[in-house]
Image (cartoon, rainbow, N blue to C red):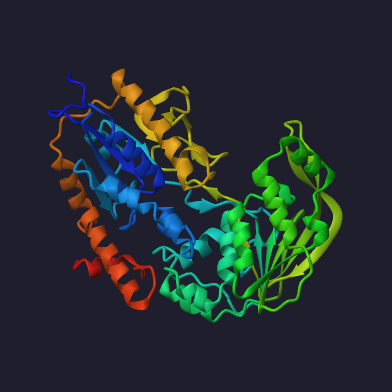
Length: 466
């Protein structure tokens, strides 16, 4: 049989998911010299870009400009987008294996990790990921409700997502109105009564996961002061020794920024954003109606593990923090996909360098690959997905050269489109998406905003005349 990758017999690749990892993989495949490849990208939503659209904070427009690169990829005549087509519902693994030589799963980490403490399911206790999706206009989360009449809110975690949540809660209506935040979220947050936001980190300032730009911009908020207890801003002896040994400039700068907020200064703004370090939640406390009323915290100390890292250890010192709403931001987690081996412990697809493995033999499954957060776990920034996808594509090309690909029948290219149209007649092409994109940008221009988002599938289909 002729090896695919020629003008007369193109390599056909299906990519499930349309976030950064998916687009970086498509880009690398389409740029291979001497290889003719057709890439079809599938997403269960009508809109592409994954967390760039639904996860990046609305006041971080510069980060979202990465979509220009993705638009360039999508402009390739060998690329197609099938939006509103859900893997496991509209299309199966068997369908894909009948039409493609290689299949790559880049579905991200779609849910959150839980804290695993008493009271976590009380009313007013939420996943930060749900709040992020809500204010970003994700169709699955637009009907969620958050009690913004509460004056005190805690965010458990000090990663960038936690910082985004705390910052969005602290922005003024004018600051929010200059973003592409969902209209309903703009209205709700403009009426917010939140006065105090607590960011809670289980380790110290030197181990905080947020980036320096994230902590620095908190000092530029128009309506919120940043406050850190001087004793919690100071490094413990182990952290100090660790930092002196590593001389890590980024961490040194981070600690300097944190400590600059620890000096007492006049409170002139209506809201206060408190950063706490070396504390862990051990229980959410509720009232008779089942609503969160407080968070019980334990004070931690750091100790050196055998691996040489610094980990928190609880002491016998506790405190209660009165709050009416809690957001847990302790990490994302991948969701298992039908027919694809999954590592439940790590929340990722079972793989080695992007090759999906058979759980029994630990050998690669022919033609099945993964990339992005569903491959390695939720780590890094948007750009981290590029080398990750390049690694996976390298394995795909290596296997292709060895003849290790799905030996599917030579179906005409329009066969899959006919199948999709039968299963999901309202599927959204990339041209359809660009029509929606133009409408959002136009509505935003009228209001002096980056864009005004469609936040329901019905709205999108109506705008497309469906």
